[in-house]
Image 1 (cartoon, rainbow, N blue to C red):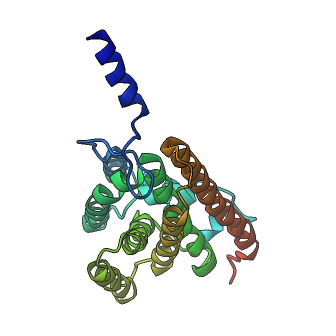
Image 2 (image 1 turned 45 degrees about the horizontal axis):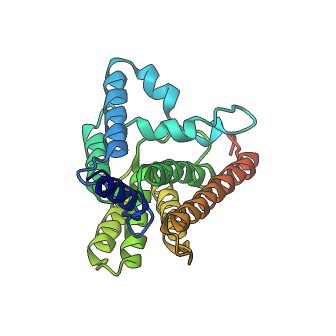
Length: 251
């Protein structure tokens, strides 16, 4: 029996770890921890906003805050955590979208890739705001990250051969809303959408490798995916450095 147990243990160790098409380890009953954490953070920050306007003012982002007049680049990310205190629907829509899409994307990508996708999409939205929004116009909300999830979902569905009509319709409706309803930052939506799509392209197009060792292939794929996402981050930071030179509060 001991020999059989050892043989079974050795076989289990050598057996390839089941992974999704995009490299995430598949675990039965896995919870979307990153999705729930982001939703929890946004709700907690919103509760603080209701008690003090200073919370909103200290976390939102305007191009002036990455310029020669002020340099607070962390706002490009913290702005994704705050929502309009006077409009609860702003928070509810974004949280519902993150919950709805995140439950599908997080298990498929894995927590690290999914978390990077959210962060980069939020940053990409702020970079678009930097270039396309007046210097003193504040923006806030997780919409850039949400549109990044929309763009990523479209690309990943295409990669798996799934029907994309539904997500295209959803994106089209939200794009129209971005331009029709006053006070919505279409710039942040655009930047998030493009960034999310680019990240998803990198995650889906990286080859898995041809080695007979499945674990080695998985490590190589994860390395190239990580380098690709790092490249997107560097590009966004470089664009920020360029864009801040053109901020003019007197325009």
